[in-house]
Length: 151
Image (tube, rainbow, N blue to C red):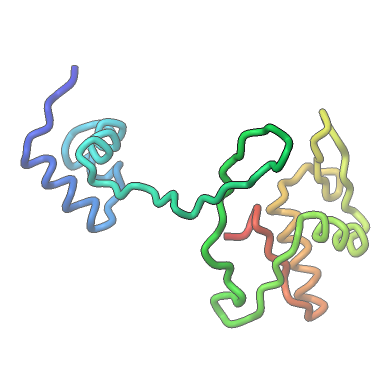
């Protein structure tokens, strides 16, 4: 059964959310569900709206297609937290490097999707990146960073 939000509860949510408390913690303190707290944060405009000014339009000159928004990143870090240079690259480059430097790495395809394997064990792209970077570190090379994996 829905329970109306009191002014005291809303002020508590505003204060707790501003302090960085998770919705789950706020919900437990108020005796409400996490979902109701999340909805209240949106309903009472406690959560800041996303800034969509970073979207730009891609034009399709002469094709008759409608433009699609493309998200662009503000900045890409050029160094890691300890000052080492970032080597931003593509997944293709990581896969090529690993294929040349790891004898037990294979790529299979299932329903047109790549499946990565080490020692015949299926792994994620993040694990592939981690294994590649282990090899690069052992050789003294800078590690790879991927847009799809590294944040």
